[in-house]
Image (cartoon, rainbow, N blue to C red):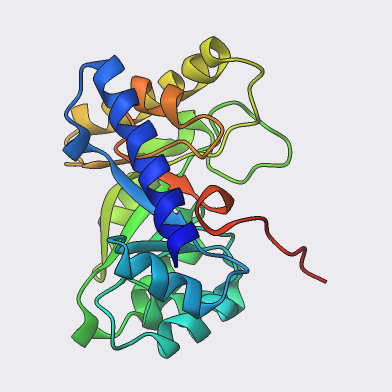
Length: 230
């Protein structure tokens, strides 16, 4: 418990310092604790230390943790790739999904979202740097997909998410995150009413916050080294 609490305090301090350097209010940036491969006990410990938002890359693993921790007021974000045969699990169990990059997946999420749960909060994943191993809609197609997502009845389009290739330095990371900001601002200008720019992880959260991110995703720096999945 003490290690997770200490790690969280360290990340919150980095975020606050990054906000100060960017001239931003620290309260304007949320932390998403990425709990993939870590047990439900670690999530509960992080919640006890003050963390409420948790991200899962592996859908089945995430659902198991959600079910184990229903007694806690947690907000669950699906941030990993979604195959068609997993959309029902995401629609039924998660509060947010950050990795929508195809209309087919958005349609299935909308159709399978239980009405009693309210709209599923959606970030569209955008591939801003053309990284060959990264998912995401190309920036030039973002407006068209955003319009399609926004028209679906049980989804609420909140913003965009991007995971660019690792950058060698702060300036390079800032430049690529600013490309995501440009996509975000262009969509806002078209009237989509977005409020979430999900950028940055443990290695580049300072650059992401400088660029305007208001949701950063941090995992092992909170929970410790991950055990590789078989």
